[in-house]
Amino acid sequence: MPNSPIAPGTPYEGKAKILTPTATPGIWQIFFKDDATAFNAQKRGEIRGKGEINCTISSHLFQFLEHQGIPTHFVRQTAPNCMEVHALTMFALEVVVRNRAAGSLCRETGLPLGLELAPPLVEFYYKNDALGDPLLTPDRLRLLNLATPQQVQTLTEMAQQINGHLCRFFAECGILLIDFKLEFGWNDHGQVILADEISPDTCRLWLAGESDPVQRVVDKDRFRHDLGGVESAYQLVLERVLRR
Ligand code: TMP
Ligand code: ASP
Image 1 (cartoon, rainbow, N blue to C red):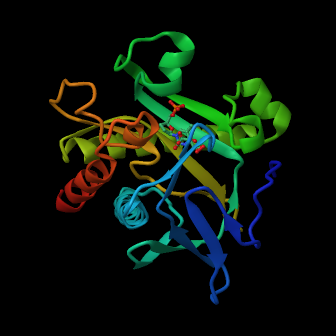
Image 2 (cartoon, rainbow, N blue to C red):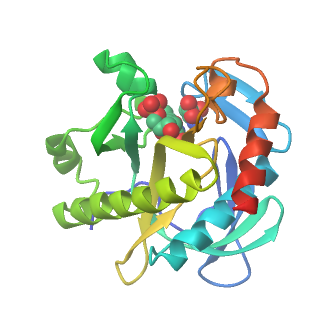
């Protein structure tokens, strides 16, 4: 088994969520906070209503993905900002899928914003705040024993499949899925399961047909770069996801 510092059994408070065990063995509760951070928590704030919006969007997307045959940790949404999930042992990895160049890819490579990437990129980052979540090479992934070669293959294939499903889903909402971050864990049977959340915090989403580079942004980049209209952008995504 790979080396993972995030083991089940202990309550855990992250930057945007709090995980606690429930009375039912193997079932945990995730409370989604309104707190927002960016740039490895150097920027902090609050996005009013974000907890409820992200929990509801994530619940909806997990159920959609389950219907497409993707195993997820989702059990049920118990309150607007609370979700019950299956307990997993988490990979210390962030799996990022990119359909167009944006964010750190543009910053680190000089590629122009919005450049279409075909095939989409699947990248692995080390989930380690102290180290600033660095991008991993395949050799470093192996060196750190963060996943077995077979698990890396499974994670890559699942990320590609999820991307296909989510691109189609958001296209039907009039939204372009630019890039997003996924987290995975494994259950007692060793099965790899999609976990965490899928929301405007963890995706870059642009309004289809909107060419204005500020108007089109309906995700956390509005908070990261002080573009204004953060709450209304999150609300717009929620409404379109629910209405689809
Ligand atoms: P990046 O361009 O900053 O590397 O981000 C790629 C995608 O991952 C983007 O959709 C935002 C998401 N993301 C997170 O969900 N959490 C993070 O900590 C970071 C850095 C990015
Ligand atoms: N969630 C990350 C943080 O606060 C980074 C980001 O989303 O930009 O550190």
